[in-house]
Length: 555
Image (tube, rainbow, N blue to C red; front, top):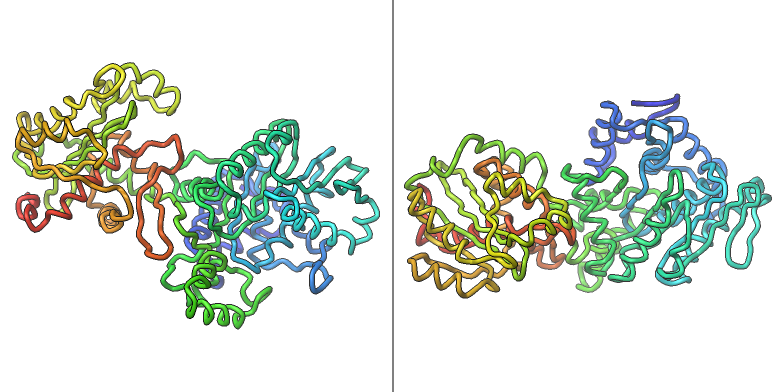
């Protein structure tokens, strides 16, 4: 639903995307599709006047500050981005977004745009006593955006005349607003109440320190009416830091299986790393190609990268935004839900006399244990999964995981097993009962190599054939096969098992940028993927032993 009069830059940009007048990657296309459809359906409110006010301010008051000093002229993609950030509001007229995550290639004017948004937040946003921080691990890095902002406003007398540069900040007395550069110091930041935080080059924020600093600044904004954290970065080399966390959260939102409502991600990434030499593909991560940087510049960089492996790695990271070992949400919500609905009304009794493959993902301590069978019939793979949890763990798990495990116990998807740790004999009985009660014979059972030797020995003594599965990048081929089958509607979940579906949706893919191999990881620390891993263990042993068991497995 739109508010006010003025041009709808979001709709205009999305129309250009759909017509391929502008070239973007899948993540950007998804975002503007979600926003456009959401505005039409009334899930979002678009205030054209607020969007236009932000755009006009930038173009009429903000100057270039390096190499030239004329006023900024925003490109369509920039106007759309500003319109999304400042023009989408709630029913009371306040900004929807609390976190904005912008991933964009090097030399696309991200520092200039960040400085311009600081200027808007400082002079026009209407927050009295605003505190705006330019945040980075070290002060000299935080100073980059801060200095760009200051040089920008010096060119405009209407802004500079009401602004004072003090020793540690830039101060606007009329609105009691301060803009300050800030280096990491989580303890010192606890007492702050920022209106806005600009995080520069988030891809270089290292590990736990970066995660803590981000969380500190986010939690410090609670008293503000419409606080905003804007993180602008290229991809980096840091593993398991705040960049990876925001990327997995962002891609989960864009794939439709996240409860996120305050995070807005602009992920300008190439879609196909194999096409990194292709200028059309490069436009997806470099929307300002031909404006701030010429196409010839990229051709020269490509030529250098082709001859030098380290330069190629840098090119993929900084110009394509393909990070080594980056993690992204994997499966689409709609496809997983189709798998659940596709087996509606079916039970294991409908598969009597079938052959199957099995998989087990055993908990190390008190976590969930999962056992699955995969039954192929008429070219479709039917999946049945049973979870096991210690009885004494139930209430705590409900609270910490925020999952109604008690409901799943009642529905028969979880077996309470043991008191403080899972009794692996219950897992053993799962496969035995499949045979005795349903005449479903599990030809091969895959298990995580760190699993209990007791369970494996019991299964072997009964007559089952087992094989260990290493859950690493070796699973890449299996993951591709599974994804293809799911997309084709060839995976069905027996029994409306929503817990297993949730485990599917909790999977992110960590990809090695050099080998392009993938392995499954959790989308966030609290998430659980045990059910999925038990399925993929079954898939793995089937693929490995297909020459031996394929004829029987086809049922």
